[in-house]
Length: 131
Image 1: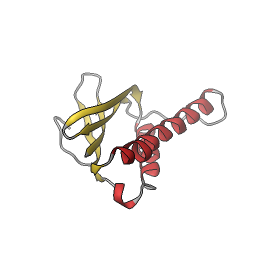
Image 2: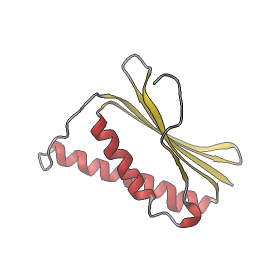
Image 3: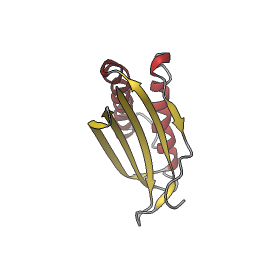
Image 4: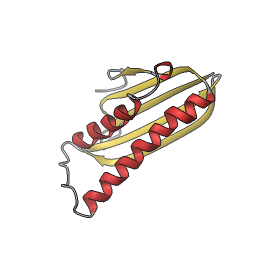
């Protein structure tokens, strides 16, 4: 069986935590559920983000404000029976609060259409080091 954990961390320039991580997790999944549902939606979220970025760059969408920019990391870890099966990590060094919320909203929007048997648990307040 597979376990998937998506973690978003937010770091200040000195490497300390800017705010608590945002974590979503799924347990007891089959390989088909991971590939056909979770990973496909993760990639679809990133494609939407790329389209939005392109629109901003080409002047087709307003540039969103960048309030309190921090480094944001997205980490998607997939384990099969406790052993790492795949892992994807992306980092944005200067992402403001507005962009963070938009990206997490895009991912949550994609994940909201998961079949009931694939729905995961969300933990917005997972405690970590610092504040």
